[in-house]
Length: 589
Image: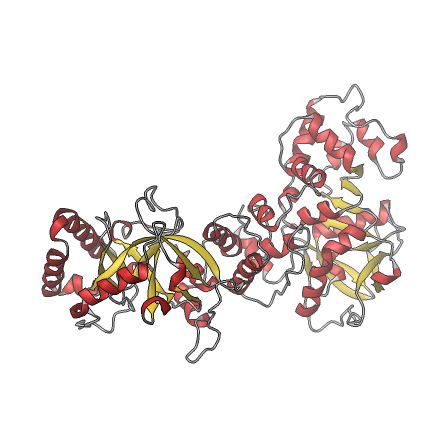
């Protein structure tokens, strides 16, 4: 689910856990952690009367000293109400839900040190935050108990549900009622059913971070209102009321399957794509610590969403974590998790991360982890580069000249060629310049590969075919007659040929298209790539140099979707190699 606008605004000044940072005018309760050892901070709540202010002591502990502590797992709250506490004698502001948790723990479980992310991490120190978040899976796995705090709103049920008293902290679990066997008067009562539904649907279960916190825990205690239940009791109570398979039931199943091999990075990203967090970077960072195959992935909140996306893709490629899944589909999933539909303008990303002049980072080894192997299909080879869309709109002579070339190039199939052309021109007239500019992008991949890797299934060498077409079309080679060089949309129309009769003949491409470029598509998305052969004969190398969209797909509102069912039918296969940024360009909607 999406956060409200109000929550998004609050997240700029409040960390996910619900703590506001002290103002610059105040002294800080934090001293830098020892950089020479693995350590963290623990919080001790000072004893006091029920109505007294909450005071805490914060101190550093080294993991090597085997500290004993519990870890709090809770929901940040809406931030509308804030309360003051003191930490190491310094005024500190926390959200209401965290204040309620501290008040509860002071009353019911005082003789314990706690790890609470809002206070134990100096959220203002980004380097410390990066280091501590990397340790969180260790922290929750080493905690004696993970204390789940669902809030104080459940107190209303205690008067009508006497069986809850058997779950309070003061009564040892050995004396409590057997799981699923509440007092007869309360069994299946409307009040009990109402409580079960409220517990099951608590917004806490939607939080992304709890997935790791629950999964890593040795022991879990669930606290709500003035009551508490051991995890097994709690999940049995949920199961008894048969409310569904989400929330705590799903997390219990995940705990049971912890060593089954299902906790791969890819599976966790898919399974928890709807989990909520205030910082979308946590869609990745919040899951890495509990994966079975992605330890070693570095967490760095200073990095942009795009940089994190690229690092995820390259990490998965390096360690073979795609597991024969479609790389482009996985790329789309990770992009959606990190950025949703709100993304920096693609042109800005392409400019920022495009190879610079004289850049020596070009990759010539297809086995490099930054090189992604994709199975594609050849739509055709460019035999004519046409005008820009702006010329089609405003220069009727350019339209006539373009149509004459269609007549010359498709004499054996003029009906379908004219149909393609009419479709494309109508679409160009209907769309504005910005919409057209978002169809194709100029981006040259930094990966090249030997053309000898690109034989078709029947042994046909694609490079020979391309060279013959180039020779036949010498007169069409890149004569730029465009009069409009100021338009923001520099895409070009093109015509293509195929070995056999092809259903798709025309399209729109990025501005750098040349005669001889191969138009190659993949199962996902609808956008194709331009592949160019550099060099002569069988020593030539292939490289992706831009993108293209065939005429019938130009009218599609979004191109980040599956190809038509016949996308590879009767077409030559082409193994293409792309870098992460080229994939990102392909995935633009």
